[in-house]
Image 1 (cartoon, rainbow, N blue to C red):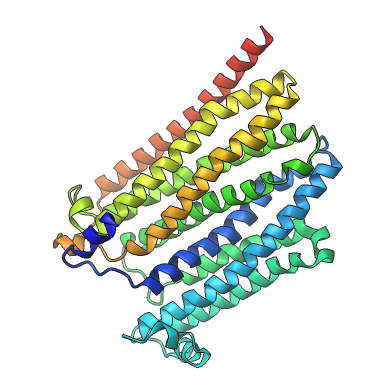
Image 2 (image 1 turned 90 degrees about the vertical axis):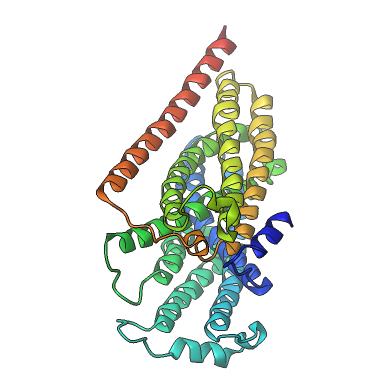
Length: 390
């Protein structure tokens, strides 16, 4: 409440209407489910379930749960996509009530609108293509609600993955050619920020849902889940790096000084988001540096009980907290609109060779720090294993 009231009283900042908050947050929630779940299934869950040491019964239980979850993400994406499209219609209608924008004829008129002067394609056409892809992606995932289709969950999930990614990528296609390097970088970093963020959050949510099957898994499930958490840890590391680098670029473009983080509405909302993401990173570091070494120790000592407790009880509790933080980030995102530079009257950000070189150096340093974190986790795991053996 304090953040909202502060933002509302900041000159030049317009608080988004409730329908705008709900539709935008809902859209990214749907995108997180579809993109995050399919990417995580392909990179983390599927390889573990196909491993020779994975028990057939455990694999079948997890495949059934994954199929049901993926079907659910398809339904959420379809509904969220429709309301997001209606929100675009309402915003383009210059004062049109959101309820009126839900009408199919209003949506059809919006999608048929001619291209603006100088545009190579109409904005409505771009949204038409985006939502056509969205419907196909959602239908592909919803097919998993059919029992017969669940036998092919691997193929269907892999088919839905590029479609889900295309939903955000197609929607970002500019109607006019970007002018200058900065415009191209804005497009690239904006999509990198969105994709890495939804993969991170959506992947966490999928794994928490799958961990709920622990009562139906065998005694050897601890080994399976140790591998799952290890694999997703690497995926999350990549996402953290991409979110950080792209977030720094986008923040620099829209924030002209540190003080604008608490003197502008945009800055306040961004600051809240940054704090939430920092808490997410801290939770991930806790997993990587504290829980993973103990999982490796239990695995090396062949302690089935502790391994099951760590991988299917303790670890998921931390991940539940991460999911809650991620949902909070989605709730804040609609409030990050406009630009702190515009509110404060600061000049637009223009990049230079020095700035780009510094950004490249920062990216390399971040990559090195993430690599060092992985190595440190491995070293702690080996130390724990040696202590257990001794």
